Length: 108
Image (cartoon, rainbow, N blue to C red; front, side, top):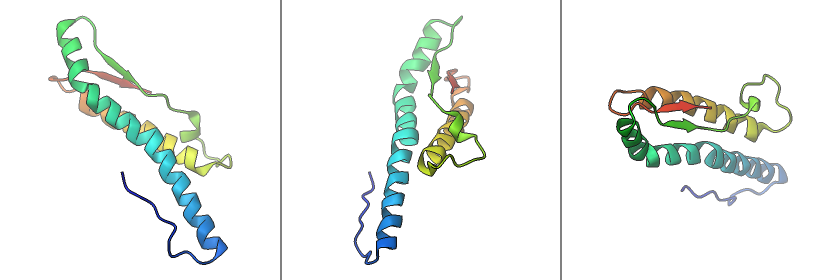
């Protein structure tokens, strides 16, 4: 995991911007990276479940929010950006996991 340092910031405005970037980074780690690593970690298990029961398909459901698709900021940029990333990640994973060797549904 990358580390974030506040070193080098002298002014209050610089520290405030650095803290804002840390909040964005933590939200992104929590809402996007965790979904990616969880889905890829369980992909072999989900694929084998689909092969074992061909009439059913395994499914990954990512919990996304409408905040990722709104046009207003709602005064919480980091959350909106991370949820938009989650929605986009879900569509990318759906494209990757629909291959014949995997056949796992991904929804949000």
